[in-house]
Amino acid sequence: MHYTSHIVALRNLRNISRRELLAAFAAAPVGARAAELPVAPVAVARCGSYAEDQAALLRGMFDQLGGLGALVKNKTVTVKLNLTGSPALRLQGRPLGSTHYSHPAQIGAFVRLLGEAGARRIRLVESGYGTAGPLDEYMLDSGWNVRAIRNAAANVELINTNGLTGKGRYARRKVPGRGFVFPSYMLHPAYDETDVMVSMAKLKDHATCGVTLAMKNMFGITPASIYGDDAGLDDPNERPTKGRVDVCHTGKRQPARIAEGELHPAGSREQGYRMPRITAELVAARPVDISIIDGIETMAGGEGPWIRGHWRGALRAVKPGIMVVGTNPVSTDTVATALMGYDPRAPKGQGAFRDCDNTLLLAEEMGIGSAALKRIEVRGGRIEDLMFRFTA
Image (cartoon, rainbow, N blue to C red; front, side, top):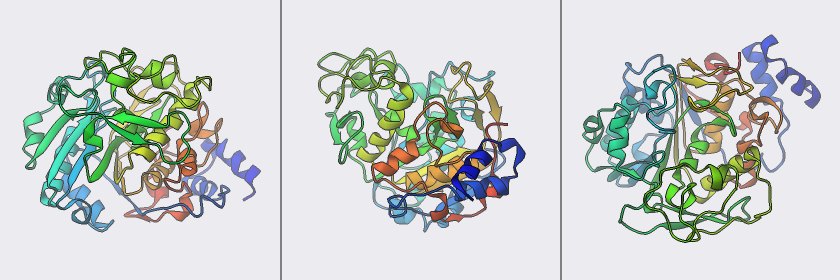
C-alpha cells in the first residue's frame, strides 16, 4: 500500500474492517532506525469481567512470555499503579477501577503472583493526586480493601511517592543521551532502589498524549513536592496539595531547584508537545521492565472524568474485554494502541495523535524500543480478533 493510500484508509476508519485496518497499520512506512530498535513479544488475552480468575489470567499471559519467576525471583519489584485524579472524581458514579484506575482485584491478583514467583519485596507505588499522605488512606478513599491487597503476599509495601515524608533522599535519574525537556528527574528513592519496574496501566484515550498506556502511566512517578504547582522554589514542599500542570503540562514555572531545570526554558509551552516528550524521557530515565495494561473495563474519550469537550466525543464507560502484557514498554504500548483501533505510527495531527506528538515515535528516538507493529510477535490471540475501536 502506498503511503498516501495508507493515510486515506486511516481517515476512513468507519468504512473498513478490522482486518483492513490492521493491514493499513502494518503497511505504514518504518524508518531504518525503527527496524534496528529492540522489540519483545507481547501477550494478549480476552477477559470479560474482573469476576474471572485474574491470577490465572495473568499467570497464563506471563507463561507465554517465559514465566513471571524468571523476571522477579529474589528481587525487589516496584509496581507503579494508575490512580490518576482524586478518588472523589468518578464517571457516572461508577467504581474507579471500572473506568480510570487500576482495578483492586487485579492488583491483589498480581501481588499474589509476585509472592508465588519468589519476589523478595513488593512495593506498590503511586503519587496520589494532591497529597503526600499514606497511600493506604488514598486507597481506602477509593473504596478498596487495602488489607486484602497487603495480605496477598509477604513483604508488601504501599508508598505514596509524591514526597519523602521524612524518609530517605530523592534520587536523580539522568535522561540518557540528549533529552527533550529536562536533562534529569528527581524521584522518590523507591524508583531507584528496585530491581524490577512494573507499569500497571489502564487502556485509555488521553487528551494531551493521544493514548495513556504503560509509558504514560510513568508520568505519575514525578513527585508533586518538586514538580507540583505548589512545589517550593528551592526545596521540595513535602505537603503538596496540587497537581503538576504548571511545571510539566504548560511550563509556567520550573521545578524546585533541587531538580535540574529545563534544557530550553524558552521552548514550546504547548501541552501536546511537552507531555509526550516528558513521558518518553521518564521511561528512558527509569526503564520499565514489565508492562500490564488493563482493558477489561475502562473509559473512552479521555483519561479521567475531568476531561470536557474533547474531539473524541463524550466520555463513556466501555468494556473492551482485553488484557495486554509485555516486557518492552514500546512493544506493549504499540500492540495496545493497535487494539484500540489506532495507528501506532501516526504522526501529529492524525489518528489518536490529532492534538499531540506521538509518544511511541519519541520513545523510538530515545532508543527505548520500536513501534513497528509488524516486528512485534503477538502471543495468545490476534489483534484483528480482539480490537476494540475507541472512536466509533
